[in-house]
Amino acid sequence: MFILDGVTCYDAYTECDFTLHTYIIAWTGDIPALTKIMNLKGHNSYLGCRFCNIKGIYSNKYKHIYFPSQKENYIKRNHSDWLLHVNEIEEASTSKEKENLEQQYGKIIIIIIFFF
Image 1: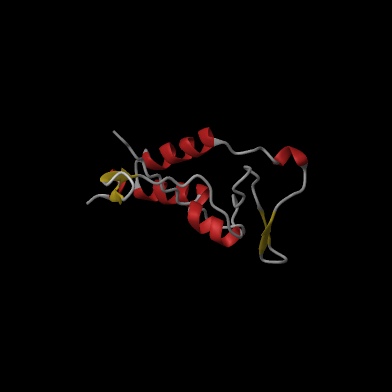
Image 2: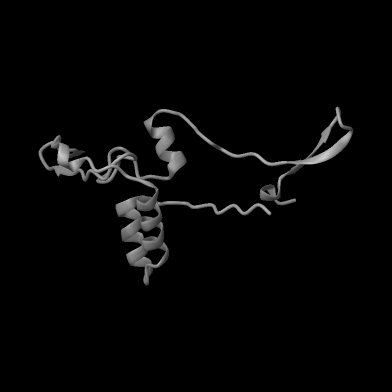
């Protein structure tokens, strides 16, 4: 049985089987947990913010990536941005190019679900 087809369940009230489909509509967690769920590189990477496209700057002195506090750097991410990144990664012509894009954007996993 394929999970995307749903799970057959029994309704004792109507005394018949039905197909149960579930959907994740929201999740919550701390930053490391959400980073794992969204398959991002992490809050200490150059593009580590899941809300905006701010680019981190590496500090040689402190050996750490920090984010400048100018307001113009905070450009919100939206669904179109995620799809653009996914398409760029999928259309990469070489494995090295794909690896570089994954390093830049984070490894993005897309699961396409079709229900008929």
